[in-house]
Image 1 (cartoon, rainbow, N blue to C red):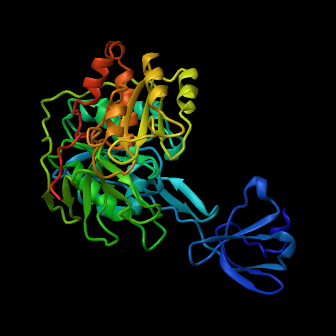
Image 2: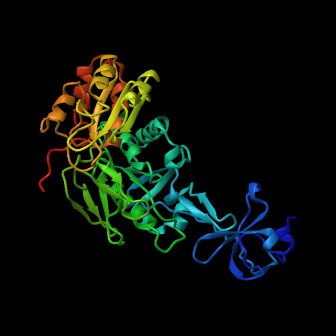
Image 3: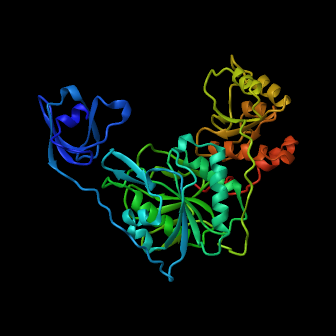
Length: 434
């Protein structure tokens, strides 16, 4: 028995307690202590935040109330009048429930778990299958995880009993996954909806419930696109369905963190089931058979150019065997040129002559590249760089890896350029009206 337990009057993790210090008393839920932190007493405050105390400073842990663990059995009945959807859980706050004993979360891994926390979703559709191919934070994923999600999606999209799929995902690198699935899943016949939550379901300000309700509505709609569905604003009124290749996380913590860039949302999705079309989209067609094309070259990189940057960084990637690189360029498509102390012009020619593919995307996020406006741009265009118009840098990186993964395309720079400038899944857009 640890020191905290000896002072705790039989309090166990999950119980409501008072932690008495010499100067103050704190009230909250007693949490389990990780093996690596045995000298600490952890408490979840009413605010939702966790706080830790050194056991040596704790005078007493006073039990206020035993909170028994709820064990309720749920028997879901399939409503024959509602469409069926499948959910693929890869991680993320939206697919987690609070575990009061440890102050963290456990994953929701069954329809019954989902019903307990999100019963309103089952008013929209029958969630008949929950599959968990892996559990990872989005920053821990790579192209192998994108491939795995695509293969699981293919199976459900070709199942005549499944109307659409929802994929739950962490937020930080969600737009990389949405871009990858947009290229990996060919001949799309039904909705593929990625959704998320910025705030956990134990918080009153959580965005999880609305996002998941709107995701379910989108999953049974006629929108056969890879899309993100999430809050349109800080309010709980409706969500946007956003194209997977034209979206970016633009805020660390706001509920409407994701915004469409250089395009428009596909639709507004309201929790009452109403859908307001905003742009043209591919329609549901169950006669199509989905196939995956998940070839990928991982030796690609994304580099943001800054003033005075040494072009020798290109040699590093060349020496490490990288096949392609996306440069986030300034303005209309600029890096230091022959007028600069550290000109990139000669180095760009050299690495491309040695076989490296160099593409350009705008670091300004909004707008499109046009190297013909200024002399510097024209100088750089002459080196052979592939300018990707208004494509987002993250989408460009994923697309470059996908294109170079096809050996038959990668043999010719001209073919690579043609494929990079082919609009496979809305990644390129015509100029928008101001």
